[in-house]
Image (cartoon, rainbow, N blue to C red; front, side, top):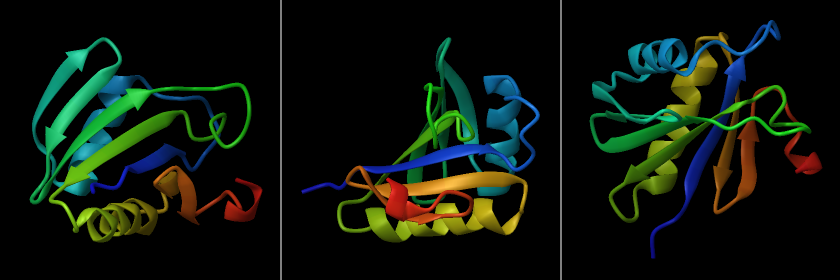
Length: 119
């Protein structure tokens, strides 16, 4: 059974969300995503070394979505999802440019700026 791996992502500075295309380029640079393509007006798709990623602008009216308005969905080989999700989280977190929440099967597992206990 495949696990759902999603990351909620925002900028470390709360100065408004950048455009999806600009944010996608920044995320792609950090994660080494190639073959970036727009999958629609709300989605950018890219290929990593051992995963595929979909980035959407998906703001909601409450936290953590207010400060993490982008949803990064990650697909990896069955059994490797958590490790890939954890690695993607760490790469983004290590830059200190992003707010990141790692969700595994819709539960908060790790976060840089949001307490998982509040999930």
